[in-house]
Image (cartoon, rainbow, N blue to C red; front, side, top):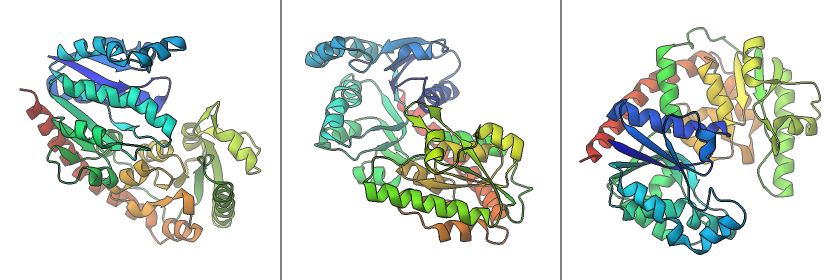
Length: 370
């Protein structure tokens, strides 16, 4: 059986690489270890660790004048990918949040890249499945994209806003994000939430700079974080951790803006050294990493994937909007009597439900291949 995986980005970003790895794991789980797999990505060289064929994503993988040329002769640029897809038995679109645009420029890039990959997949007439993702909003006309999704054999969405975009389409299913599904399996394999503290004596905080908000909204965000840190320090020992230190996405630089100048450890090292009772993380990946370590995590989110993930995990009252942080809500939630153990129990119970949903999704996917 030949499977082509579309919409890969780059393994240089751990989150984007994880999307491809999880898609491959799903394919192998459902169709066997002898499945032939091809990966289409914007940085295929970064996936050199994979024992599979890799292909350049048209336009997205090109650079400089080559990208301009491919964009100008778009149908010709996609001819090679069309041939790859037509030789496949199944097309799998990775999960994530790539099918959206926030500006006119982003919408043009979307139409040349991911939206055109989707169109090429649909025109191939090969069975296709899109793994749990967020779709929209679009800065511009998005009806053609929705129309193409409607012609796929199965589309899994990971949040309610994406579900609403499709109304009553019978090929669209609500399902937890693949990372949440993987998390559920690991938690059930190694239950660690049986020894939660009655109240958090040590709290680890993972912060990040705000997105491209207005000056006033950014100022409010920073003020709320400073207030949160002070309230936490009045009750517990507080340690800060760094989740990302890459250029342009440097958590350490943001901590320094907050007046926190001491050397900070990565989250994984912080969890090992300080063994916190609670993590409060603005990064979803930081929250999930904490949960995998058996530590309850409150999530401050400004992306809907965070709300979708926590809703799927049955702990939606432990996530709050980063654009309008209510510090009292956070403090009252995490310091309530036996809040940590009750969080752990609810999460564990929901993980069993997520495993059942994974089995349903697997059944739908297996039924697609004719």
